Length: 360
Length: 264
Image (cartoon, rainbow over all chains, first blue to last red; front, side):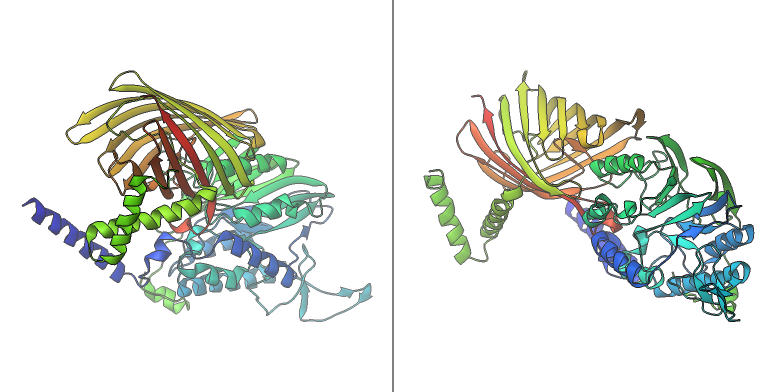
């Protein structure tokens, strides 16, 4: 009898596993259990891409502007409906935020979902360019007029208005890569759009600089190569008169409550990161990953772990799924929570808008 | 000298027979043992051994162990250090264990104390333990305090540990205590616990001087009783970064080789 019970249990487990894997299009358990790229490879590729594309994201505000804002969202896990990312970017563009950051797990790893993400980015780029670009009229001191050429007033980059490149995009959208962005060869999809997972830029305001650092922790570690780059002074290359440093990464250090996953950094690495944040005189460190809000001061740094913005966790939206940081001075800022309230659209609506709709 | 002992010659002969008699189950296990032994011997170049839980082999004898630890991690690169343990039995149920850890390259220093209660329940050995550990991560000026309570169940060829840890740390004048963290360990061996040599496979989120969060270490360990009082032990341990879908990158590969002295 005991043997029979054991056999029944084993057969049931095998059947359950079979159903689970055959009902999913991606049958390789490798994608579930193991990320397909190592952080070292991604960082190497990021650095090559960053220099190859001659990315210039450093911004300079006019002398009369002494404060600016940016918004941050996390864990959109885009599938068929990229509506929440669309809503976030619309809010940011309409409100005049200087740029928009995303803390990873941007889309679940299917080509269709990244195509939907790309559509959102292109549409937002078009909207942002319409609103912000100014006609380019000068070159080398001479009057120069090209009716098609426009200038980003903050970076000085030139764009043809009908070219909505994804990378380097005119849209000031700065994501970090999350663990769901690297499963099932997801990095191939992610990097096609965003090319880099390890980068920085500065904002010049009132003669000083605010520094924005984006770290790749999708594997639950910064990895040896990234740490070596940091230790070799990657973020100190052109050490300027730094006023604030804001750091963005996916994997959390602090655990919002007993119900959420603990940090997946190894202990020493956690202490290394906290120590490094203090070295950088960081103003705010942003994390995602656990889909829950946490806010605390530790080591002279304000740490914010963001909730997710996806439809699964928040089908009816919420008033606190994004944050807007208005930077007003040296370690002086105002933080406001921003709501997202869009509802998931039907298959018919999405197809009418040109989005790919697949079985999840 | 040990390698030429009669016991080892017999073992070598058995292994040779195994290689000829390919279908016999026992021989398969011994071949597997040979492969694992060779692997662990190779890996002891950077090997480490978890010596905190000296498996019960039928006798309660006070033990002193010393080991050399080496390894490589993403922050400090190569690391080297040593670990010391003393385990004292008051009687067949109660014991205490004290340990010291120094890792020079990491500038990591730790001490710990552990009390354990042993109870035999039918064919199981149950060990309930309470432990306090203090680590100073000098490189990051961080002090870490860990309290752990665990229960370990042992049988002939395997053991499982379940428990919880409270981990707090101080840094730059601030303190943070993490919510209760699960402690999990599983260990299976090729030979029974009373055997004079053994090789095991381990999965767990802790080691001698740390309790991890959600990261599950894995590795191989072995021991070889050289004489009644002396036992050689070793371990190869991979400490991954992240968990589940994050697991493409490792954080640390470490190892330990050491000896245990038992009072007779």
